[in-house]
View: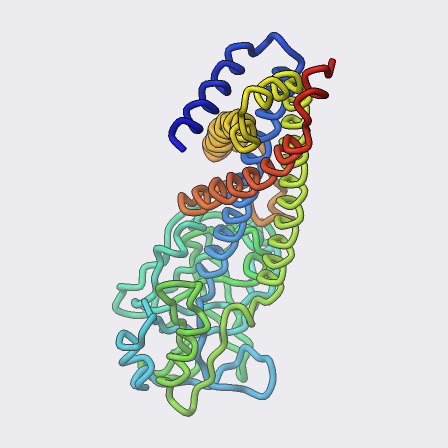
Length: 409
């Protein structure tokens, strides 16, 4: 076996020395380019899909949560039935497997009024346990509200859409009328302006102090609208949801973010299907090119194949010659393709070469998010499939008869 392998490698290396002297070398360069483009597009397809998914999910989680717990109501309303922070779910959340953080929240419908404009909104009240680091990524001006004041804070954070609609700037004061009986009004100050690009949030949500909502609703300091639960691993959402379900108090109901914002997660499924279709087409084209190149290489070397057979070489030995040359083309194509993908991804993230319309895509540029494990698996899968395809044309060597092959011209 050692001699057989050395012989095949020797002949394959001699064939490489003649590159540029025959038609197959041009086709080989085309094949390398095809493989490079194929693997680059595959890697970028996964990276761009991962970037879209990650960015949109992070925007959703910055104003929502993985799991929401509150009392069930018969109709969809912003008037909440209070729950107590003394409940076991809130007090013992850290002991639930998979739960990373829990925080209180409350919502209240309101009307924002300046001297010139009026707009409806929903105030989301948050407390000192609020994970503002998630939200601060959305801030485009100002800062988050100060929750450490002795009394409730009269600062709010508004979306850029609302700021434009009401012609608001940082430091501006406005009146907020809360929808209740009797109606109440508070004067507040704009502390920050955020933007997620998601209309469900940007057209409606303002952030305020939960103590203000507690005061308006005549709640005590232990009463809140509900709890927002964040988990360690989003891929384990269903498992952690069951853990929370088992641990929660009977008076509560819980919902998953995939149910509350179903339209986005359905979109992810559609994008994933599109990625699969693109990858199948790319693999088909790359496989067809490898088969074509190998057939051309075999056809050009028909006389050589006949001579080798006449001298006693086996079909396996000759087949390995073309497999080795095919592997060389694949490796060159993979190296070039990986460099192209990583290079383009770096430039896109740094300089935003391909912009997007935030009103349609929720971000201003194509996001590229590389995952080392995905890149490795993509390369290994590509190699395995192309090698399998490469074996197909080499089996026609067994049909060559030495006399006819030597006479072939």
